[in-house]
Amino acid sequence: MYADEPSAVVPKKCAIKVARYETKERTPKREHLADTPLTIEGPARVQIERTLDAVLGMVEAVSILETDGSFVPARYPPEALKEIVVNAVIHRDYNISDDIHVWVFDNRIEVRSPGVLPGHITLDNILTERFARNPLIVRLLNKYPNPPNKDIGEGLNTVFAKMGEAKLKEPEMETTGTMFVVTLGHTSLARPEEIVMKYLDSNDEIVNKVARELCGIASENTMKVVFLRLAKAGRIEKVPGKAGGKSAWRKTV
Image (cartoon, rainbow, N blue to C red; front, side, top):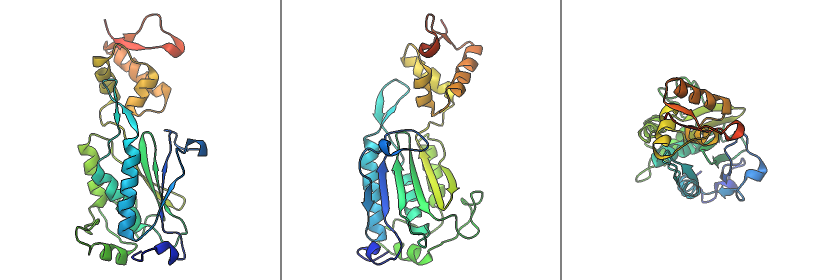
Protein backbone atom coordinates (compact mmCIF):
# COMPACT_ATOMS: atom_id res chain seq x y z
CA MET A 1 0.00 0.00 0.00
CA TYR A 2 3.06 2.29 -0.15
CA ALA A 3 4.01 1.52 -3.74
CA ASP A 4 3.26 4.12 -6.42
CA GLU A 5 0.55 1.82 -7.81
CA PRO A 6 -0.40 -0.85 -5.24
CA SER A 7 -2.99 -2.36 -7.60
CA ALA A 8 -0.15 -3.42 -9.90
CA VAL A 9 1.68 -5.17 -7.05
CA VAL A 10 -0.99 -6.56 -4.74
CA PRO A 11 -2.66 -9.72 -6.12
CA LYS A 12 -6.05 -8.63 -4.72
CA LYS A 13 -8.14 -5.55 -5.50
CA CYS A 14 -7.13 -2.63 -3.28
CA ALA A 15 -8.51 0.55 -4.88
CA ILE A 16 -11.45 2.77 -3.86
CA LYS A 17 -14.58 3.13 -5.99
CA VAL A 18 -16.57 6.35 -5.55
CA ALA A 19 -20.09 6.49 -7.01
CA ARG A 20 -22.85 9.09 -6.98
CA TYR A 21 -26.40 7.69 -6.82
CA GLU A 22 -29.18 10.20 -7.45
CA THR A 23 -31.68 8.51 -5.16
CA LYS A 24 -32.57 7.91 -1.52
CA GLU A 25 -33.46 4.25 -2.07
CA ARG A 26 -31.83 1.76 0.28
CA THR A 27 -30.93 -0.50 -2.64
CA PRO A 28 -29.84 1.63 -5.60
CA LYS A 29 -30.17 0.54 -9.22
CA ARG A 30 -27.88 1.11 -12.18
CA GLU A 31 -30.17 3.81 -13.57
CA HIS A 32 -29.63 5.82 -10.38
CA LEU A 33 -25.93 6.27 -11.18
CA ALA A 34 -25.20 9.88 -12.00
CA ASP A 35 -22.02 9.03 -13.90
CA THR A 36 -19.37 6.36 -14.27
CA PRO A 37 -17.95 5.53 -10.81
CA LEU A 38 -14.45 6.82 -10.11
CA THR A 39 -11.63 4.36 -9.46
CA ILE A 40 -9.07 5.86 -7.10
CA GLU A 41 -5.70 4.14 -6.92
CA GLY A 42 -2.30 4.98 -5.49
CA PRO A 43 -0.54 4.59 -2.14
CA ALA A 44 -2.66 4.61 1.00
CA ARG A 45 -2.32 8.29 1.86
CA VAL A 46 -2.97 9.39 -1.72
CA GLN A 47 -6.07 7.17 -1.90
CA ILE A 48 -7.44 8.82 1.22
CA GLU A 49 -6.81 12.38 0.01
CA ARG A 50 -8.18 11.80 -3.51
CA THR A 51 -11.24 10.02 -2.17
CA LEU A 52 -12.08 12.86 0.21
CA ASP A 53 -11.71 15.42 -2.59
CA ALA A 54 -13.96 13.38 -4.90
CA VAL A 55 -16.66 12.80 -2.28
CA LEU A 56 -16.75 16.42 -1.11
CA GLY A 57 -17.14 17.51 -4.73
CA MET A 58 -20.11 15.19 -5.17
CA VAL A 59 -21.71 16.25 -1.87
CA GLU A 60 -21.59 19.92 -2.84
CA ALA A 61 -23.91 19.12 -5.75
CA VAL A 62 -26.54 17.57 -3.43
CA SER A 63 -29.35 19.92 -2.33
CA ILE A 64 -31.03 19.44 1.03
CA LEU A 65 -34.45 20.87 1.94
CA GLU A 66 -34.25 23.10 5.01
CA THR A 67 -37.03 23.77 7.51
CA ASP A 68 -37.53 27.28 6.10
CA GLY A 69 -38.41 25.74 2.73
CA SER A 70 -35.13 26.63 1.01
CA PHE A 71 -32.66 24.24 -0.59
CA VAL A 72 -29.02 24.38 0.50
CA PRO A 73 -25.95 22.26 -0.34
CA ALA A 74 -25.60 19.18 1.83
CA ARG A 75 -23.09 19.45 4.65
CA TYR A 76 -21.36 16.58 6.42
CA PRO A 77 -18.67 17.10 9.07
CA PRO A 78 -15.40 16.74 7.09
CA GLU A 79 -13.68 15.21 10.12
CA ALA A 80 -16.31 12.48 10.32
CA LEU A 81 -16.02 11.64 6.64
CA LYS A 82 -12.22 11.60 6.83
CA GLU A 83 -12.17 9.21 9.80
CA ILE A 84 -14.54 6.78 8.07
CA VAL A 85 -12.43 6.71 4.88
CA VAL A 86 -9.17 6.38 6.84
CA ASN A 87 -10.60 3.51 8.88
CA ALA A 88 -11.72 1.75 5.70
CA VAL A 89 -8.23 1.97 4.16
CA ILE A 90 -6.27 0.86 7.21
CA HIS A 91 -8.65 -1.76 8.62
CA ARG A 92 -10.13 -3.43 5.52
CA ASP A 93 -9.37 -7.09 4.81
CA TYR A 94 -6.81 -7.13 2.00
CA ASN A 95 -7.27 -10.89 1.57
CA ILE A 96 -10.65 -10.17 -0.02
CA SER A 97 -10.42 -9.28 -3.69
CA ASP A 98 -12.69 -6.25 -3.67
CA ASP A 99 -12.34 -2.48 -3.55
CA ILE A 100 -13.59 -0.12 -0.88
CA HIS A 101 -16.85 1.43 -2.11
CA VAL A 102 -17.96 4.96 -1.22
CA TRP A 103 -21.53 5.72 -2.32
CA VAL A 104 -22.90 9.25 -2.22
CA PHE A 105 -26.72 9.35 -2.10
CA ASP A 106 -29.18 12.24 -1.92
CA ASN A 107 -29.55 11.78 1.83
CA ARG A 108 -26.51 9.83 3.03
CA ILE A 109 -22.98 8.58 2.39
CA GLU A 110 -22.15 4.88 2.67
CA VAL A 111 -18.59 3.61 3.06
CA ARG A 112 -18.39 -0.13 2.39
CA SER A 113 -15.15 -1.77 3.50
CA PRO A 114 -14.22 -5.38 2.55
CA GLY A 115 -14.10 -7.71 5.53
CA VAL A 116 -16.08 -8.31 8.69
CA LEU A 117 -14.96 -6.77 11.98
CA PRO A 118 -11.50 -8.05 13.00
CA GLY A 119 -10.51 -10.04 16.08
CA HIS A 120 -12.70 -9.55 19.12
CA ILE A 121 -14.29 -6.33 17.81
CA THR A 122 -18.10 -6.33 17.62
CA LEU A 123 -20.71 -3.67 16.91
CA ASP A 124 -21.27 -3.47 20.67
CA ASN A 125 -17.66 -2.77 21.71
CA ILE A 126 -16.29 -1.07 18.59
CA LEU A 127 -16.14 2.34 20.30
CA THR A 128 -14.25 1.10 23.36
CA GLU A 129 -11.98 -1.72 22.15
CA ARG A 130 -8.95 -1.64 19.81
CA PHE A 131 -7.67 -4.19 17.30
CA ALA A 132 -5.61 -3.46 14.18
CA ARG A 133 -6.11 -5.95 11.37
CA ASN A 134 -3.21 -4.33 9.47
CA PRO A 135 -0.80 -2.99 12.15
CA LEU A 136 2.00 -2.30 9.65
CA ILE A 137 -0.23 -0.07 7.52
CA VAL A 138 -1.44 1.71 10.65
CA ARG A 139 2.10 2.26 11.97
CA LEU A 140 3.66 3.46 8.71
CA LEU A 141 0.76 5.76 7.84
CA ASN A 142 1.14 7.34 11.27
CA LYS A 143 4.77 8.24 10.51
CA TYR A 144 3.82 10.87 7.91
CA PRO A 145 3.96 14.54 8.94
CA ASN A 146 0.38 15.45 9.89
CA PRO A 147 -0.72 11.80 9.57
CA PRO A 148 -4.31 11.02 8.55
CA ASN A 149 -4.54 8.53 11.44
CA LYS A 150 -3.62 9.39 15.01
CA ASP A 151 -3.26 5.70 16.00
CA ILE A 152 -4.89 6.15 19.38
CA GLY A 153 -8.14 4.32 18.68
CA GLU A 154 -10.33 7.44 18.70
CA GLY A 155 -11.40 7.44 15.01
CA LEU A 156 -15.00 6.29 15.33
CA ASN A 157 -15.51 8.22 18.56
CA THR A 158 -14.56 11.35 16.59
CA VAL A 159 -17.16 10.44 13.94
CA PHE A 160 -19.94 10.17 16.53
CA ALA A 161 -18.87 13.41 18.24
CA LYS A 162 -18.67 15.44 15.02
CA MET A 163 -22.03 14.20 13.76
CA GLY A 164 -23.57 15.27 17.07
CA GLU A 165 -21.95 18.70 16.86
CA ALA A 166 -23.43 19.10 13.38
CA LYS A 167 -26.89 18.24 14.82
CA LEU A 168 -27.04 15.10 12.67
CA LYS A 169 -28.00 11.63 13.84
CA GLU A 170 -25.34 9.10 14.80
CA PRO A 171 -23.74 7.04 12.02
CA GLU A 172 -25.14 3.58 11.39
CA MET A 173 -22.80 0.58 11.35
CA GLU A 174 -23.54 -2.92 10.11
CA THR A 175 -21.91 -5.99 8.64
CA THR A 176 -23.43 -7.36 5.44
CA GLY A 177 -21.89 -10.54 4.07
CA THR A 178 -18.19 -9.74 3.73
CA MET A 179 -18.58 -5.97 4.07
CA PHE A 180 -18.48 -3.59 7.02
CA VAL A 181 -20.74 -0.64 6.19
CA VAL A 182 -20.78 2.78 7.85
CA THR A 183 -23.57 5.19 6.88
CA LEU A 184 -23.49 8.93 7.51
CA GLY A 185 -27.08 10.09 7.17
CA HIS A 186 -28.14 13.69 6.58
CA THR A 187 -30.91 13.40 9.18
CA SER A 188 -31.50 16.03 11.85
CA LEU A 189 -31.27 15.16 15.53
CA ALA A 190 -34.44 17.17 16.16
CA ARG A 191 -37.69 15.28 16.78
CA PRO A 192 -40.01 15.05 13.74
CA GLU A 193 -42.64 17.12 15.57
CA GLU A 194 -40.13 19.94 16.09
CA ILE A 195 -39.07 19.85 12.44
CA VAL A 196 -42.68 20.03 11.22
CA MET A 197 -43.51 23.00 13.46
CA LYS A 198 -40.33 24.84 12.47
CA TYR A 199 -41.20 24.37 8.79
CA LEU A 200 -44.69 25.78 9.44
CA ASP A 201 -43.12 28.87 11.02
CA SER A 202 -42.01 29.85 7.50
CA ASN A 203 -44.60 28.09 5.35
CA ASP A 204 -48.39 28.06 5.27
CA GLU A 205 -48.76 24.28 5.00
CA ILE A 206 -46.87 21.01 4.78
CA VAL A 207 -47.56 17.78 2.91
CA ASN A 208 -46.48 14.25 3.79
CA LYS A 209 -43.77 14.03 1.12
CA VAL A 210 -42.05 17.23 2.21
CA ALA A 211 -42.26 16.27 5.87
CA ARG A 212 -40.68 12.88 5.16
CA GLU A 213 -37.81 14.52 3.33
CA LEU A 214 -37.20 16.94 6.19
CA CYS A 215 -37.43 14.30 8.90
CA GLY A 216 -35.61 11.46 7.14
CA ILE A 217 -38.66 9.21 7.49
CA ALA A 218 -39.23 6.66 4.72
CA SER A 219 -42.76 5.52 5.58
CA GLU A 220 -45.77 7.64 4.63
CA ASN A 221 -47.79 6.07 7.45
CA THR A 222 -45.09 6.79 10.04
CA MET A 223 -45.15 10.44 9.01
CA LYS A 224 -48.94 10.46 9.22
CA VAL A 225 -48.67 9.34 12.85
CA VAL A 226 -46.48 12.38 13.57
CA PHE A 227 -49.13 14.65 12.06
CA LEU A 228 -51.85 13.00 14.11
CA ARG A 229 -49.86 13.44 17.34
CA LEU A 230 -49.47 17.14 16.62
CA ALA A 231 -53.16 17.43 15.72
CA LYS A 232 -54.17 15.71 18.95
CA ALA A 233 -52.01 18.19 20.85
CA GLY A 234 -53.85 21.02 19.11
CA ARG A 235 -50.76 22.28 17.24
CA ILE A 236 -51.83 21.58 13.64
CA GLU A 237 -54.95 20.85 11.64
CA LYS A 238 -55.79 19.58 8.16
CA VAL A 239 -56.08 22.17 5.43
CA PRO A 240 -59.78 22.31 4.45
CA GLY A 241 -60.63 21.13 0.95
CA LYS A 242 -57.49 19.03 0.56
CA ALA A 243 -57.82 15.28 0.85
CA GLY A 244 -56.27 12.05 -0.38
CA GLY A 245 -52.95 12.53 -2.15
CA LYS A 246 -53.27 16.32 -1.83
CA SER A 247 -53.75 16.30 1.93
CA ALA A 248 -51.88 19.05 3.73
CA TRP A 249 -51.53 20.32 7.29
CA ARG A 250 -51.24 23.82 8.73
CA LYS A 251 -50.88 25.43 12.13
CA THR A 252 -54.13 25.41 14.06
CA VAL A 253 -56.16 28.52 13.32
